[in-house]
Image (tube, rainbow, N blue to C red; front, side):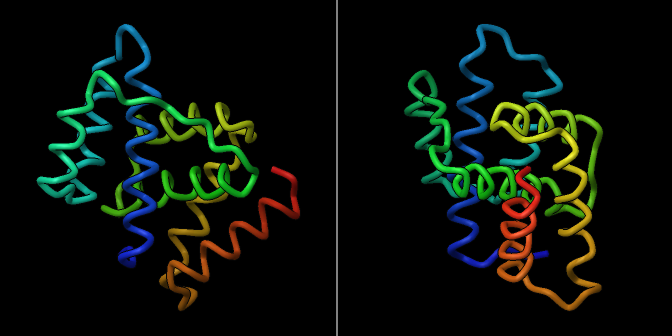
Length: 143
């Protein structure tokens, strides 16, 4: 499922925030670094994006999404980013679950998001429709 231009910008912003979250640890597990590098490749980060990361590497700061909707967007972006290559690895699920719990969601929300994103093309839905449905689902179920 391809991302629209505006959505790609939001997903990149979420990626940088997730990167900052893991960077705040003194030591990062190699499997998490490999996962983050994979995602940066999947997002086709531009030279400008990579230069920003390089120049701010020691200053990247995790910013907790403030509102419930921002948190929903953030976890949605992560799960969508994972599914860009149509392959979901165990480490990606682990990172997504860590992030979902950090945002205050139940760990099971990750599986629900994957199902919605993976089945969207077969249901004839675009990313905007899926995003809206997921927001509604999470709000209605208070996840």
